[in-house]
Length: 106
Image 1 (cartoon, helix red, strand yellow):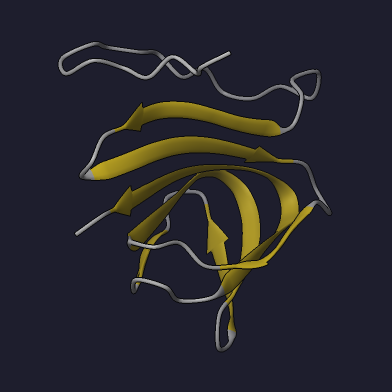
Image 2: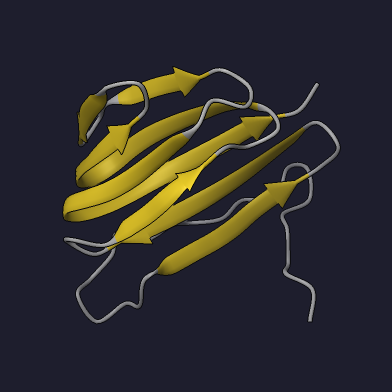
């Protein structure tokens, strides 16, 4: 079953997470040019080291996570950062974290 992705101009409300909401990713948009995903991680959950084929932005909307690149970087609510194309990284939730991840393809 294919995931529903938003059409241009289609609005979506992303509610704040609650403890009863499962961990996972909500695919928002995927085009030839970019992809946007909402990612919910529970405290202690880890996404192992990986890289994406495009430039990547990570916006921490809620909670706290540690992003491991060449060095650990703690992201809290409101923090945003950019990773270069192909940069390896992992993510570990310190507290339940809600992230908006955008990948920009060339």
